[in-house]
Each structure stands twice: as structure tokens, then as C-alpha cells.
Image (tube, rainbow, N blue to C red):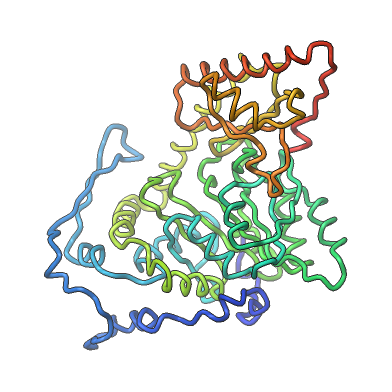
Length: 452
């Protein structure tokens, strides 16, 4: 992919996308000047940084497994500069060395060379960055396009910001471009069209679907035709274990378009390094990243310097190829977990539910036929299944309007084979009990492949 073929959209293009809050938020007076402290010979009286001589920490080191040598651990020790950076205030956009490493990763993986028109910001997990991005792009009451079913964390976010969520249908191949096109082409005249589309293209939570190359290209075409931005939330990108070659990201594919700058990408290290360390990063048009950084400067100020330095020391010692080797091992781990879960579902739920095997991530979405509750899995799971000793998430949690749903999301990431079999055995018992009450009534199935 030759990103030199595409021309970046001009900075003023985004003036029509930024929210009123983002436009009114001014750069932090102190933090905007912090980079100047690095000028040679400059004596800074600028920031109210505490004197590091008062900090009690004198050293820091850690060990981690080697992705390339089985059973071998590698160790890393902070030098004086690492420790100083890790214990002090930092920049809203993130630790400079870590940001540079992420720039290199995006070139290595997505073939996007570092240029002046796009930037990277580090956040306290990708959810932190996603919230700040949406706050920077929509005003209360604005319409946003969301794939449906959708990640419940995004639902809560959009509800908090008082957005009107417009559901775009999905199936096992990703966003249905026909549904998206229909929504946009039938949009009421005189009413502003949505400015953003939210999607999880790999191993979507909850459906487990992965968007195909054809669907991704169709969505990019519609973004250009109808002038909206794509929020590419991709925490499961590195957890892909499908048989087909990995599809390019939206961030990579837009380099083949006439212009770049319609994709704001969110990456997470939670699924491949540590969930508790809370590190994610966003990549996209510089004006949008500036808006996110301005938000950070007036809220949590920055991501923990210490955790950023820890992650940098690990990634820098690995390099890009070793990092990819590690993520491939992680994806193989989840593929094995998926296979165990799949076998248990066939053993216990055949004839009681339908599903499509996921190609990435850590979730399965299954369709039950408990018509005794009119296709609503909420009572089935929150009442009957809990009493039987098994817990999953009812499908209504993934729908913007909270309507009834016969779907159930199950995660296969943590439990061992015995626990999985016992859990699905209990769930099967609950579904059979519901079916007994319907003896003599015909059961109507809806094809999951078509409805996801």
C-alpha cells in the first residue's frame, strides 16, 4: 500500500466536525509549553514540577517472558533518565519515546509512514481515548452511526454524551454497506447527517465477527461520499486467528483512497500485554488528536509516566518483529480456547442455539429459541441461568434502543475446559426447561449468519 498516493485532507477540513466543547477548549497554558524545556541551554522556570530529590524510589526493574525463546525470561532495568521520566509529570500526548515506537509500529503493521498530517496520542486504555474523541466530535443530541449489535462500553459512552444512536445492521461479514447506504441516502433533507461511524472491525464485541476486505472498502467509499469519519476501535486486531490472510485495517486502506484523514484508529495493549496497566493509543488526523490532547490536559493531565516507561522498555527490548511474534502466540492461545468452547457448544447446545464461529477476539454470540419469554434472553440469563449457576450477558445489553433480544454473549477467554463444559451443560438445561413449557408449539429459527 503506497500511502504516497493519497493526499491528506487539510487541517481546516475538520472545523466542521469538531464539537462546540472541543472548539471552546483552549490548549493548557503550561503543558503547551513543556516541549520547549528540551531546548539546549534553556533554564526553565515554567512548570510546578516537584523536585525528584524528594521521591523515595531509587531503582526499578522487571522481568518478562521471551516470545522467541521458550521458558526464558528477559529483564529490564531503568537507567537514570528512564527513572526520572517515569516519576515526573509528562506530556498529554504521551511519553515521547513510546509515541515514536507506536509510530514505527503503525508503519510496520499498517504501512503508514510518519508524516506531519497525522499524530498519535497515548491514553489510559483505548476507552479513555474513544470517550475523548467522541466528546470532541459530537454535540449533545447529534446523530452517530453505530454498528449493531455494539460494544456496551461504547453504548454507555454515547448515552453519557446524549447522542442519538443510528443502528447500522451487521452480519458475519461486518457492517452491511447496504444498510449504511440506505440510512444515508434516505436521510431527511435539511437534517445534518451523522459525522461519525463507530465500528469494531476485528472480533467484534459481542458478535465475534470480522469485517471482510470488501465491506471495509465499501464503508470507506461511503465515508467519502457522505462525509463522515470512521472511529476504528480495534482492540482485537492482534487476536485474529481466521484462516484467510489478515484484512487491512481502515487506517491502512485509506492510503489507497484519494485522501487520508477520515479514519481515527484506536489500538489497545490490554489484550496482548496487560489489561490493568491501562495503555492504549489513537492514530489519526492531527487536528483530532490535538483535540483529544487538549481534553487530557484539562482532565487527567496525562497517562501514568511510570507505566508508559515500563511498556516502552519492554517493547523497545523486543522490537517490532518480536512484538508480532508475541501477538501471534496470544492469538493462537485464543484460537485454542475458541476451539474448546466450540466443541463444548456442539456437545451441549446443538439444536438449542445457533452461532457463527468467531475468527478473532474472545466472544461468541449465540441465538436461543426460548420463545416462552418472547425472544428476550434477559430473563433466561439474569434469572433462570443464574439460579442454575451460570452467567453470561443478555443480548439486549448490546442494542442501542435496549429492545428485546434472543441473543446471548459468552466469553471463552478465562475458563478451562471442564468449567466451559459444565457452564454450557447448565445453560442447555435452562433452555430445555424453557422448551418443555412450549411442548407442541412450532419453533421458528432465524438464521444467525444473516442476522448478526
